[in-house]
Image (cartoon, rainbow, N blue to C red; front, side, top):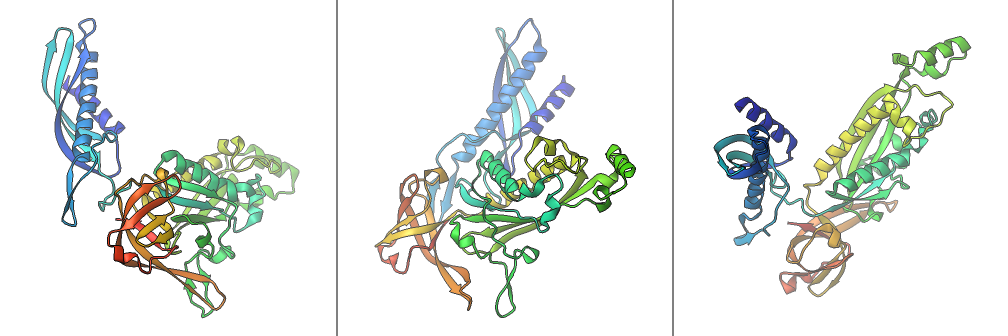
Length: 404
């Protein structure tokens, strides 16, 4: 019985996982009907019910915890969060009442408490996904993969939207790098390099995701350049050979949408067998592409990239652009979908813009040490007030609010 219980407990622990957690030891009860005097299935069902109850109790405990911030006692709204990871399940008591088996357990529950640094991830951050151009466009001719430049960012945006932790916007029509070889850097007139993307100011989103596909070539370029008919036929029949391996390499860049600062840069690469006929133009987001080992390797890499992108961005502070000011009243660009509620507090940052001799902008954010409290939340706009009525001076449209 104990071996069965141990295996079942491990199964539950593997099924219920979270990113950032704290451990709580709780006791809970679960019940199940005994059918045909068979205690085994009833015991499993009762332990499952008790495990779920323990996880829910831990979630309520965390959600209703008290917190002191800046000398003020704050109490979070009490709510049931998603189930946590359950470990060290121990059966404390088992009793039968009529045809009902009641099991009482003790368990350690790891409950999701937000982000590692204590910041909240409850606000949806806006993120624009721009084009992923090919550094060598001719490499996309094989298989008709030139459409990867816009199909890949569209797919990334769809994956992020489905998860619900970020609010992505498709901007796959926009290539923000005039020179792909040196992206994301650009050279200033004095010879210095900057990582500020020239066009990020126009998108009005908190983050800008962009990329450059560096390599989509065959590992052996001779594979599809064979003039001899019989050798070419042999190559086609020998489709599992390493000569059919194809590279995939891209550089991913994430910029802050309001300052232009480069927040993340990483290179991703993989390879896989590409065995489709040379004349077939399948396209990136096609079933033929997905059926290729190469397509499956790229899909796996894309999933890894989305995971890391979400992990990097979801716990950063929320920020948005101020659109209007009037005395101590402030309006900023966000809405009900962002998760902001009345009473939420934000810091106000002044946004300065500097131009070089060719009128290319560089942005700087400076903390004004002023606090905004939200008064009204509308579908596409949020209104708030500065805590001190005398603090409205020098707060202008284009400045930024940042979650505390």
